[in-house]
Image (cartoon, rainbow, N blue to C red; front, side, top):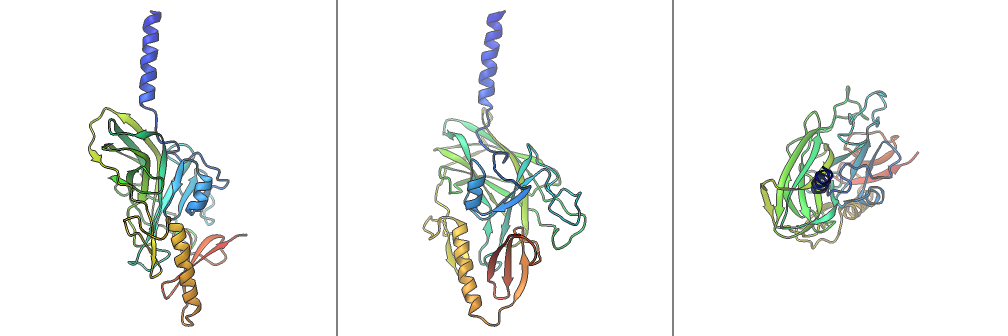
Length: 309
């Protein structure tokens, strides 16, 4: 009887190991954020969030208890994480260029506990949700549009790699999506980027990324393409040449340069005037608001200002 029990324990141990989540911080819990909501450019994100490297534009973290709308102190915008206490907020926006000339988007890579190989099938699952609507819209409580995400595999921490799945739009509640895939070479990261762009206010919530080895039949088989994500500043817009030859290795540096160029042009143009001020999610804001604000002018240029109390 003791021998049988030992055999069963060994079998259980192998089963548990086979189902181990390879994503090291798939629920965004490993971070040093001290406030309930924060939107960060890559440099700040990478110094704050463990095992997730940002290399696109801004991305945000929100806690279960976060209250972002001062007009409704008892209203919780995110509605709670799907797993744990934190969830990701990713977006596509056109802050640094006129609509149609180039757009920025959240992009990051999840670090894995083991290298993916061509001898194993893998199953990735995750949850997405559309942004919760506010009871009433105000300048500080603006309903953003829905979005989708693209999932990729990569062997470079700052390259999107090769797509394996594109989600539908987020639903009213947390909805799980999954894909079973294999690769013909190797990869070390699962990557995420927002799919809808070229306009403002497209946002989606994401949480609970789980990657396990599986015996299920793969529905997707890809060869990982690891062309680095780079950008060039062209006519005050950040454009990825898609061949790794861009001047800037991340969107943040390109956007800062394009913004500086645009600011110099504004100063030389006496006819420019302010169209609107928006916050990190593209919502119209007042100049008295704190945090990161974008001043959008009639000539298509943008000034980035950080207001600290």
